[in-house]
Length: 367
Image (cartoon, rainbow, N blue to C red; front, side):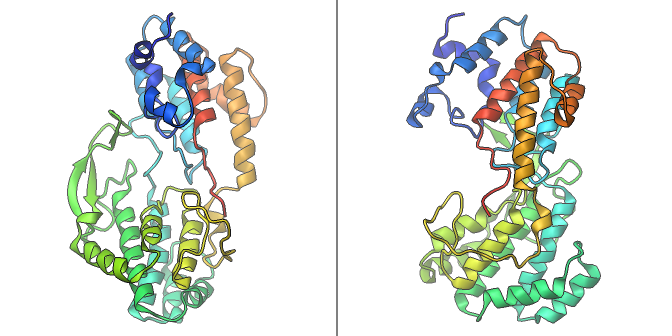
């Protein structure tokens, strides 16, 4: 097979690089200092595909959904998305719904609702004792809510217009995420039905011609809300670090492994009324060391365990497609889910391995 730009772009193997440096195709990839044509492994994968007697429809959908939409910056349910991709290959059945980026189950939403209640009480001028007592009785998570509320009030400190507006904008953003983010049994009918959080629009969650669900999903355009526009206009006037706060508030996705630690650090910065913390997308050479005050350590994976599992997972996949099956807990699960090898499965697994090696896999963000 002669390697050309046209050959690559016509291949199914070219359709799974979302959230990698290959995601925008050959020419844009060179802007990031990488050359797709120089990737020997990818060329061999495309050649492996070319040697197949056609790519069945199910395999094309597995590439476009399961492999393409692996969560690039991690997912709080790690390693569920990775294992579901393996199961899709092994069963030769594309998923109806990919549990990846921007998807969260009901339990995650209920966890965030407890913290939003705390923020709403602070904004309303309520006492930490009152909301702490309510959450001890009715909260979803069983933690020391009176202490959480007391510590939160201390972190936020003296009330100012800037803090009130930032908290109000943060509450709106989190409520929008709770309403917007989908799961197969929660396509936005269950949460926030009594709240206008942006104009409604149907969306298929399409990215580069591929979609990770098989049916349209509701979408709510938060920026269209006059309330949001008014809040942001005032914040732009009085907040020197508003662009940082705006980005950080908007990108606090619930699906992130450390969504609640992210919230904790953002609240610390709001209490300081400045860009006080280092983040992955907006690094600081020096940032405040933020103590834990939301008691959220149990909501995200252990980073050492994640790293060890990921290494074993990739090794098991590589061994499987090469016909060198490994042993061990992770390898045994991979082998069981993949079943007996076929040429199509071997190509898919090799493609999956390369995607995992290229991806920006921030399963646990810096603390």
